[in-house]
Length: 177
Image (cartoon, rainbow, N blue to C red; front, side, top):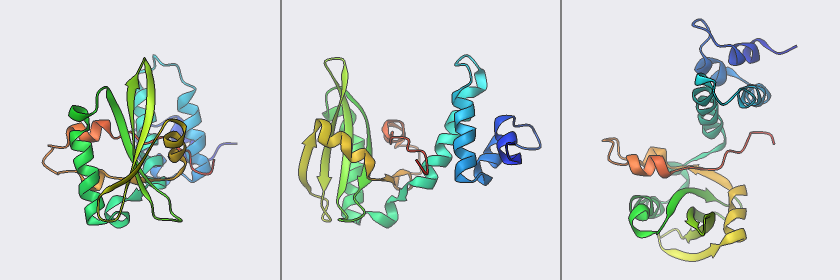
């Protein structure tokens, strides 16, 4: 028998909005609600909205705050990269930032379209904000298993970082999986 939160998450109403149900859901309930909405037909108008609400909650739960994890120099480097990527990287698609919790190593992982396929690349950023290493392909893709850093708190509040926000696409990792 599904919990009350799962029931409200799968059939939200005015008294029980999806945002509230998702925020109150335990990890297992959140995964169940997400699975329900993923299983709905693509043509269902609210499906995309529901999935984005749930994915945002998952991201908030699993990501680390950039203001707490990155040095000020790393924060500047990440924002400089993000603001210039669309104009300096041919066929740039998206990026995200990760940290190896054990070593503290920070990576900017980005994807660009090459020969019709998405290709992963990564740049290591040291504590002083300098690029100290880079990897491509499978090595870069493997970095998605590290802890995701939420850079949204670093974005300008005046809306000038809209391009950064739209190209910031961390991989979705369901909690507890």
